[in-house]
Image (cartoon, rainbow, N blue to C red; front, side, top):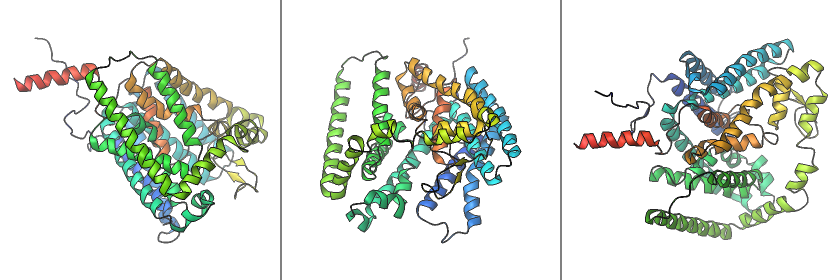
Length: 456
């Protein structure tokens, strides 16, 4: 008798896959929750008023500590075998080189607190890759990301409505990012917006409401803060989506698809109408749109920032100028710092950079670049080859930051790095994760077969 095909890795009947025996996932969710809690306390100015510096340190350190536990139990359970062979070797090689970076940092007598900061970054990075590579985790991860995205959206709306007199001031951008940064800091926790933008029409009705509302609030506040980067990322998202669509087979225009397109069109029309009403009601939001457009086209625009402004080249140049021949090759190790201009920054030495390329050169030199970047380039190559439209939803949240790694640095302690690494791990995995109610064809066949058997 032929053995019945079983796929035990996903519970399709709504039961959570998070159990006490799944320690790596449990610890990782605790790590992200702790980092998120720390960000919220920092946003509302709790530190320094109600909590002591020691309590602040304990809350900050709990996230990386849980990440270490997740990484430890993940390695102990052989979770790295979920990665494809190239990425598995790349992952283990980076862990080995991280040990060298730690010793190199001690040899350079770097500050212990800075070494600890970089160690925390690596714990979050490696644990996120392991957790994301396990397809069993993605039902729980999707629910967790949706809950976090919903919480950040609600808090953004509340803090936005409570801005008060600042909304009447013309120089709102500087006021919101420095004088009253609560809404700005919470807005920065909506890291997963590309994922929810790509999956906003999938999953339960509640999840769709969360995705639509969260993405809309994210871009309204991006206008309010006059930030160009989110819209550059949005254009990149559209370009990647068009590129991905060209490789797919065109669908027939069925009655069901026509209804879906009509619903999407009506939804877009309603959202646009609501946005226009909000803009007309909020006088400063209308001014923010004009000021934001000026940042793209007038003096100090995006083109001048890239071609003429030294803010994008300053850090890599300083890292190279301050490096000895040994540091050029191997870096300053964990805890290495960069010299900054006192007139532009409150500190003259910083353990991190705005540029991801400069960060890698500072810590690990040319050798780390030769180890780290092949894996990132391989991700981009894999994305160019993938034909599964559903995998686009996992690739795009990590491909966009990689493409702009020179302009931004995702390697920092916090919720953002953990979320980014989840998507990277899913793309590097040998398994195809199940997200937002999407399943494989073979798994769908098994589900339908089991349902037929139950009916009989």
